[in-house]
Length: 419
Ligand code: EPU
Image 1 (cartoon, rainbow, N blue to C red):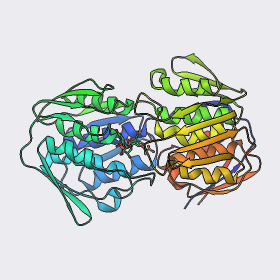
Image 2: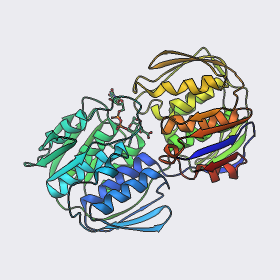
Image 3: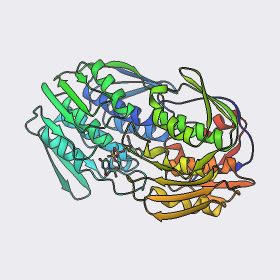
Image 4: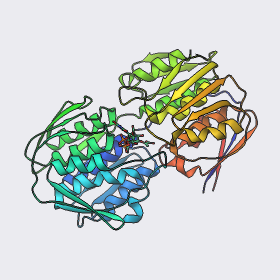
């Protein structure tokens, strides 16, 4: 177990660069199963989930070589189709291997994927989409056994706008000759980034970033070189960290087109932000105001659920009462008890909604990170608080935020890690 020790109340100052997008890196790494040719993937975030996916690929027989901390070369054939169950249970994104393994070997046995406990996370949408493409999937004891007897292109309408189900369907359809359509598809930037990588492999995906994808698959796909796009969730998290600590922080390597809804919400909170150029944004100190507004998560291009926990911390520093609503995950909001212990004025209305009244001076506390995004939110709260906070279970934060401690230290945070 790791603990972060944070002495709060310091203003941050300087520049910080955004890492590659975790949720783009994971499906793009899974796509390497679709070919034996060399795939070179750059701008990978140095996070635990990427390490887990690389370990899964190695275990499947792929030759994985680190070129540097952010770049890998992956080649060679998979030698079996049963991803290591111990690795599979480390993260939900292991399920992204199902589509590519079916495409390459015609079968796959996958243990139950793990991941953050933030609510019921069904797999039905994945299975329906893969079944439409010709797969049979059944639950066998603690795993799923899938076979692809009759691969066929299909016209798919997803019952949920699921990010990883869209990606799984894309990954399998990419290798099935003929035209597949995926309607009610997820539109997130990471889905579009995967579509771009698949196009480099020889398939033709149109509509990436929209809710209607068409894929013209190809039996044999080739290698590719791809640079993962920056992580808009990390960009938003850093902006919130800057605003909560009343800092002057320059955030580099952002994509303006990925920030649109966040910028609307941040402006509603009177955050002081300005673009220095197309990929650099500056956060300046400001008097935050939430009025009595509602902030809610929506499927992309709406406000992302993965930024809701940090947004709640932002609301604790703003004048007024914010209603924060996350309809997606049933357990996302439960971490607010930790903010309440720090002095925040929050009412949990039901599992999906909290009322946050501010501003409040947060006080450092012994804390524990319940999941990745709540962990990041607690780091921000501790940076803004008076006194010292100890955040236990901080290894969960390593799953999605690269080198957080050195990067925050570099901009003046008083933060240490102990194991
Ligand atoms: N949902 C619905 N109806 C919908 C769409 C979604 O009820 O139309 C519900 C789902 O049932 C589920 C939740 O919303 O409970 C999220 O659904 P989705 O299937 O999209 O989630 P996912 O594909 O398993 C990915 C990300 C998550 C992120 C969600 C939502 C990856 C590897 N994971 O998960 O990322 O929260 O999309 O945007 O891409 C994280 O990075 O911390 C993380 C959890």
